[in-house]
Length: 308
Ligand SMILES: C[S@@+](CC[C@H](N)C(=O)[O-])C[C@H]1O[C@@H](n2cnc3c(N)ncnc32)[C@H](O)[C@@H]1O
Image (tube, rainbow, N blue to C red):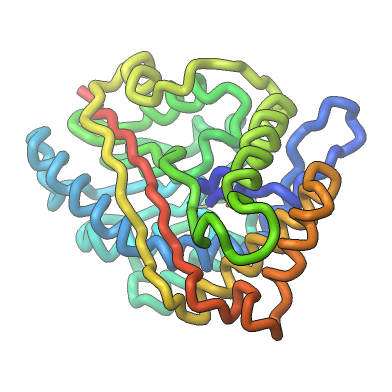
């Protein structure tokens, strides 16, 4: 789902609250395992990105060793919170999220990873609570800003919390995962691409239903500049798990396809529904849990801006 890429994060768990305007009501707690699993699969990307951020801080004259406070805004279960604490060993890292159960996971993970003493949590509902975040040397926000109606206003608020010389790192978009050959031997070739197109429509509808939704050109470096920051670079990081996949990646793909099967029941044609059912068959050698050709390839994009 996007943790999409997280493009698609949340689909299948978005319910119309009955307010008549499709307001987002994602059950984030129900998605905890999924988000955590996806985050874990992408740890190498985040380590590379953190090393890049350390370099950017040095270039900006604010050495990573003087970065004292980092925020992971929309931390979810805290895979990246703990990672940032490891990568910035002198800093306090605050996991900020609107879902208490996910913050609990973030705390538990930090303890397990031996960085609990430097990880704090802050429950905050955004955008209302932006003013409670306090200032920080680095703000990392991964696949969260797109869940806020006015993305530019969100960046404005986050930028205002970055200390001079510090960085705002916004993880948005990239390339949705690919995980199967074009032709898998049954069904109409190209199913993952069709699922991706449906996810884009879901994503637009999700955004349109957010309170205070404001449509804007999603040019993240330009938006960071508008927020008063100096764009410090955009980089995309590949996550590539070649075939044959291990058990964790297979279960993650199984969960992903199950969500998509349920979310797009009406939009998919009969043939694609049957193909998905066959891929979801946990006993079949041609199912995603066993087939030898399944892989995982995705790119995650990080946009940075520096405060002066
Ligand atoms: C897609 S998950 C991303 C988790 C993590 N950053 C990652 O990249 O794996 C989005 C997270 O943002 C949080 N979130 C979404 N909308 C929010 C809001 N309006 N206020 C506070 N937290 C929010 C959710 O609780 C969830 O943990």
